[in-house]
Each structure stands twice: as structure tokens, then as C-alpha cells.
Amino acid sequence: RLLVVDGRPAVEVLTPLQLDDGRVVVVNRGYVPTVQGQQAPAYPAPPSGTATVTGRLRLGHADPSNRPAVTGQGVPQLYAPDSRALAALTGLELVPGYLQLVPDAPGALGPLAVEPRVGGGAPFTNFSYALQWLTFGLIALVALGYFIRLEVLQRRAGRRATGDEAAQESGPDAGETPLSERYGRR
Image (cartoon, rainbow, N blue to C red):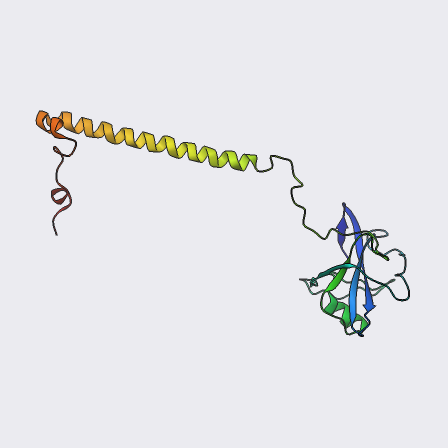
């Protein structure tokens, strides 16, 4: 209930399937579009007799609002494919989770996407993100060069202000005040 597929309301069809060992598994057969946005339409019955089912085992999705099943008209409807809620509704002892049928399996209805989409975007989906990091890197290099230049200019200006020719010839640290005098002694 309340499923949207390609912008249109739809419902997933859950069908219990009894295994050879007696356990009952919920099979998600896919989706069908709803009638007037809410009512589940008539859909084909599952294959009768013994059937081989191929699908993917998935965890159930609990309804975060914990809403009760809608049992007014037609088939009961849950708000999420949850085997626990379906077990409480039908009185069956169901295996946790459900089996999502593959699209070409017998009894499958409208297939639901099982795998996550990868690489479905444009070829340069993250290009702007890459440009952002390249820009930040370039800014960091320019800032580093700027601060080095400022330091060099400040040291030259300090030498000119003292007028000490000998300090300029003997090296960059000769005219500087020792650190112990600048920051105090211990």
C-alpha cells in the first residue's frame, strides 16, 4: 500500500508459499497499479500445484508508523512488506523476511528493482565535486606561496630597519632577537 512506481500509485502483491518441509515463506510477486489510487485491482492468481520459485531473499520492512492493515474492501493491504504483520493478519506461521521474485519467474507481476542502480548518471556526475577539490588545492598552493613571500619581505624589511650591514652578510638569523629574549626564560 502507498507504493509509487514511475510516478503512479501501486501495490505489491504478497503471497504465502508453503515449502516441502512445511515452512511458509512470503513471496513478493511484484507490483500492480492501483484503481483510483487506493484499491488493489484484480491480478492473476499464482501458479497452482508444485512450483519452483527463483528470487532473492530480503529482510522485511516494518511500517515506521505501525499502522494496522486495511481490511475494508477486497484483499487486505499492509503498509510495508513485513512478514510479521502478514503473519498476525493471516494467522500463519511465516518465515521472517520475504522472497522477491525475479522478473521472469512464473507468477511474477510488475517487477520491482532489486539491485541498486550504479553508474546510471551522466558520465561527469561528480565533475563539479572534482573541480571543487582542485580549486581548493590551487587556493592552498597560492596561499602557501603568498605567505612565504610575506615572510621573506618581512625579514628583508627588518634587516633594512636595523641598518646592520654585517647581519645581512652573515645570514638570515644573525640580526634576529634570540627566542629566549622574545618569549622569556623558564
